[in-house]
Length: 114
Figure 1 (cartoon, rainbow, N blue to C red):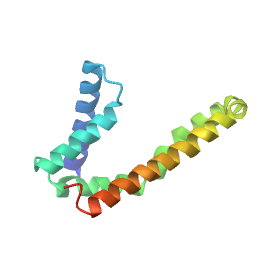
Figure 2 (figure 1 turned 60 degrees about the horizontal axis):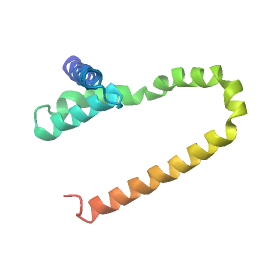
Figure 3 (figure 1 turned 45 degrees about the vertical axis):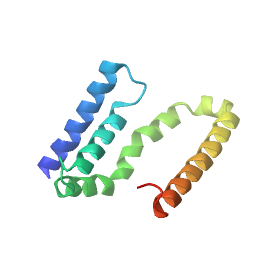
């Protein structure tokens, strides 16, 4: 489990370093996940090495939303004033994500993604 946690932290650190050094508008943790995906697909990292820590983190994922919930409560007055654009953006982006996910899943299932 320690090795898996170290791999996840190294991928995140490398993602942060790449994002900051190149001035990319992509968060370092997202770049780190891309690096982890590339490492897994290339065989550089084995799934067994990270699966135990990934299961542990996924099992406690609700704890990671506590800071976001506190942030929402902090800006409750602003959210109250700007509820319409926030609601529209949330609904539109949800449907866009669902449509793109469905399209990609259909394409992958029919063999177009290989």
